[in-house]
Length: 225
Image (cartoon, one colour):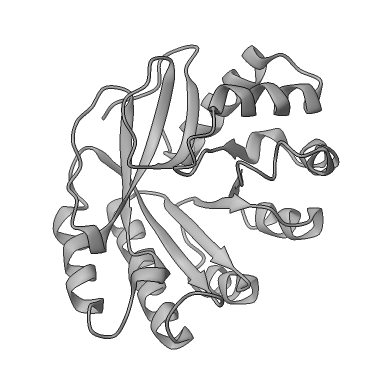
């Protein structure tokens, strides 16, 4: 498996990525696109079923695709999997498919990357029911401190929505959370991960180098390295 080099900026969630000097990327592959991972330097991948692209007709095909390809050495995580009450199929199908991906995560020893919109009760219930051994990473977080602390109390990591975390109103949130549970991402937006690091480092009152070192340590914890 590729691993970040000292001094790399880790972009923990991106799409359709290309290798970038000085940046280590966890690139998301979606099962409905049937894209297989490459072995590009400076990149690893997650593979899963996004709720936006799930329906009763394609469910079996998508799960089979994940199961058939998850052992690839370049796939380090499962997902993004999860729940979306604004843009997704019936919740019973979302729950079933999420549980199947949790099982794959546990069976393969690979962490789970999660998409969650307006369905935090469902996510919490799933976590309590399964009590997973593998870490879960919430990507695109833009909620309140109380929700963030609930997630962290259940041993989850949080990656902030790229646009939200650079806003002034996010400063107090990032300062209030344990830095050993956070990540930063660009999510296919084209945003500069270096600028996001600089903003968050300023908010925390630490150097960019210190933040890079901390997130590298978080990455090792996420992947159980």
